[in-house]
Picture (tube, rainbow, N blue to C red):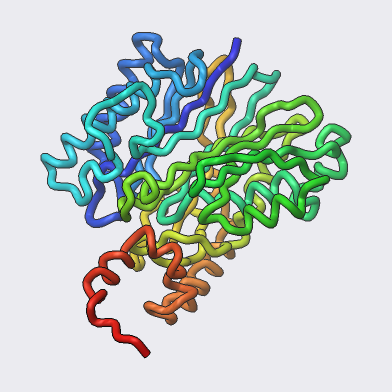
Length: 364
Ligand SMILES: [Mg+2]
């Protein structure tokens, strides 16, 4: 029996600014998913939030991109938007870019990561969600977990992992994708994914048998809407153990608070801070960007967990370093590299400024 995990997320309003999903909205989502579970539309669910993003994790027997599952999530976001508007929460319904549902939430605003598999004898998975960043934020950690032996010694030790992994990379500007096989094409892979604003790792499969190992959400709201809307905050599902990276090899890259795009107004670069669910509430300059990691065992579709993986004190130093890097980056104020490069501002606020001053520029 194939089980599908669907993580569908949206920012449909938060408080006080772009900081936290209100408990009322989380309750609506839980109530609706409870109903769906009772009606056997889904097997199990877990609702959580990372910053201003409401995250719905659902397990079910339907394939990926199923209209019923996507419709369920869309209806929940619609109900939450209604409540958010009633409460006058900030940015109510901001990720809902279309008025009517057409069978799939892709391209409509919410972010989606879905994976379908036959459960192994034990099926550990990690659900990652980040706030104040963009889909390419997973490029560094996924590369390090699945291609870098300094992070993942299993690549050397396990004969199965020794054969490497294949990365599907999407060009989110030109809407095309490519598959690159590691270790053979590692340098070509890095040539692309080093530009995380454009090239995003979409999925990873194991070379030994084609087993699907990881999937990410790749929606870029600004590219859909043609202007700055939200922060494209991404989610990711990674399967672990049994000739796949172990939990530690999945979490290890986050001990380094690498720089990501998306802090404050979606226009600044800052360190990605690994935090517990409780601390996924970015308020300093609306940041710094946060990431949470929840571990589950999938057992006949039931979700056993979560284990809040970044709650571990061994990530304290990463958080301290992230705060130091945040101080340093903030000192740059409106200058690059803290502020995003002009190319990225093209999709956000720059066109409005250019328009306002277009007649004021004279020849030199
Ligand atoms: Mg967000």
